[in-house]
Length: 160
DNA sequence: GCCAACGTTGGC
DNA sequence: GCCAACGTTGGC
Image (tube, rainbow, N blue to C red; front, side, top):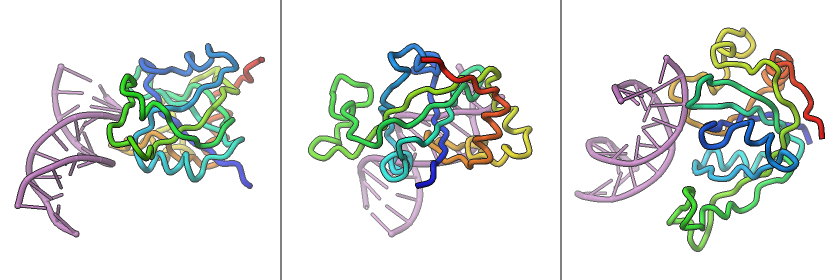
């Protein structure tokens, strides 16, 4: 099975890459995805070992800050059933359609790659995240894109 | 804070 | 099933 590559958006005011690094084992569940296309990627296409670029949206700067690895495949997202959660979904009662995966940070970028750098680079400027109005919070990334970004960013392995 | 682009909802 | 209205996303 071939490893896939993804871009995960997060608003740093809610959950930043730094927040991920501060967690035990630098691992978190990617909860709260409430878009069917994004869910389908997680449910159908995410495998353990896939690598994810972590992108800050709605932020200054908007940039990719590091890399996380999928460490657990899709399972039911309990926040959809919790009335106290901001991700609560009234309609999920009975049959919860929402899933999440677990990811673990493995590298941080010495030089975070900003949106404008992505737009400038000939191998990156076609990326979905750059498309105007693209709201999809989980996006497939090609191997070339991933490796180019990883190299430009100066990925530093996170020590255990 | 503005607002364009998008996904979802609901009336018909 | 259409599509207008709405709420949300996210760059700027």
